[in-house]
Image (cartoon, rainbow, N blue to C red; front, top):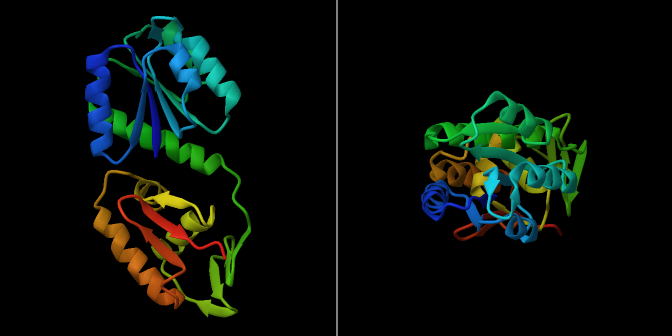
Length: 218
């Protein structure tokens, strides 16, 4: 999960980056509006509204204009009601006032990412080589052979199958299937192992060490 942290206070940015990295996020730090606008695409923006080269609320508006799917959380010392209302009206999904705890921020991040995932259109059927997934009926076949999966195994497979051939980080799978990124990574490994066994071809789901898993697209 890629997080863009827009924060001009270097000490705050360092502490937040370290805490988020420990939780499995990949963090890019931008200290200015210009740096934020030039940053690589991401899943979530943590946005301070007081920046040295511009207004964070206008940056929020521009980021939302660029992407309706990206999650944006204003993380700022501006705690007045009018500031909260303005931030939300300009496109922020949530608003956190400094000081805050990492437990609270983590919960808000997960809530925003879950809402973004639910808002994304879900295909009725997914095909990858000989693999066929009927999302609505929750059925799976491999080369026309029915495969019986548990609910978690099916959800993991759909998480991978949304982008066949692309590496899906463990944190994205945890969020899609368990609703949190703050969980035992061994849980994913166990379920993926069981999923591979039931699919009958261990090569269908590849492990990308230190990152996550990839469903073969062919």
